[in-house]
Length: 213
Image (cartoon, rainbow, N blue to C red; front, side, top):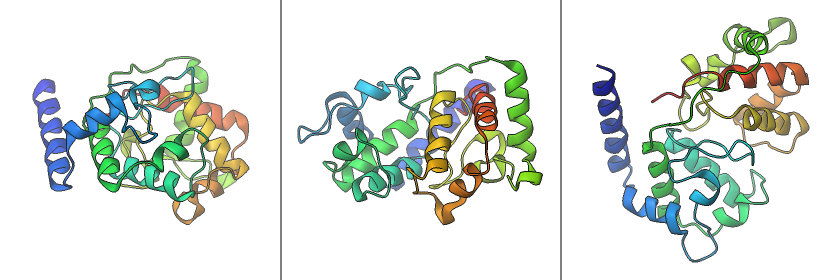
């Protein structure tokens, strides 16, 4: 049954890619070789399978919604999201290349394993992620990012199985104002009310979940 569900999930990803006009083969070539116009091979940082690199701070991209990935690349191009590595790469990509590479990574099955570290910290993070901290005006993370942190549409990425260090780094970026490409400044408002121990807790919790396949 699990295998059949996995096959069905891949079928719908491929169907969505077809509907969007994406070319997965072209996306894979970009991941493998770059585009020869300044975009390095994506696998250098994110891996061919999109697993990322937690030690270097590169996020997992496998299985992330293609609309979200495409939006981030466009935001890098337009300067509404800042990153010294990604901005110059994104600016060399055509619209078709953005669509293709986003669809390619979305079609990959996450292979990273959940990271079970400090169980008490993750348990605290679970309470914040699932119920929020209303005394601090912090809503439950899943109210935007979906059940089990599976992600919702172009604005709320999957968090389940993402590297804890990357989640924490992005929350801190919103808190400090160095990232500001969220709708209606939702994440900025939440992040500014989160102390570092809450950020560490919720990051540990989502990293402890299996990636949605």
